[in-house]
Length: 127
Figure 1 (cartoon, rainbow, N blue to C red):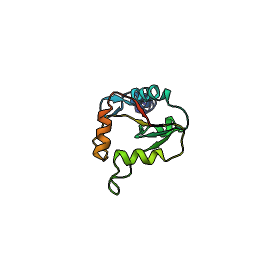
Figure 2 (figure 1 turned 90 degrees about the horizontal axis):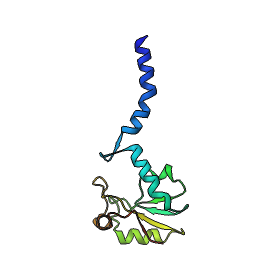
Figure 3 (figure 1 turned 120 degrees about the horizontal axis):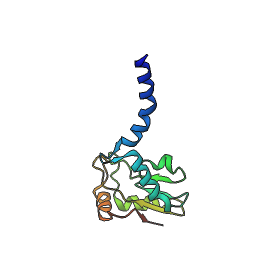
Figure 4 (figure 1 turned 45 degrees about the vertical axis):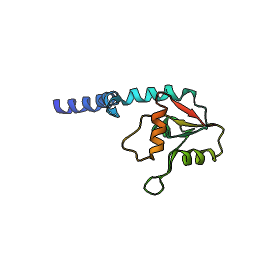
């Protein structure tokens, strides 16, 4: 009986605990990351395109369309080609989100240099 009570208690309390303590990028909890995301995206209008967008945009801001450089395994798209490609799409507002360079993403060096050169900003407005 004690074991069943412990199991039920653990199952009911663990999700809330894990929500606050699971870390994103090794230094930030999921809850903190989502709060920072929501604050950052307050100024972004509905229906815009966001290049290099945070992965959470898909469910936190489904009204925005995320865009990423083409897969470098097939087409090594540099920053100029990426910018030209997303500006061809019909959208009233187009942004590029500035994030720290992720060592696990294989993007062209010019994209990584663009991100590093704009560190400290939230977005670059293209249109």
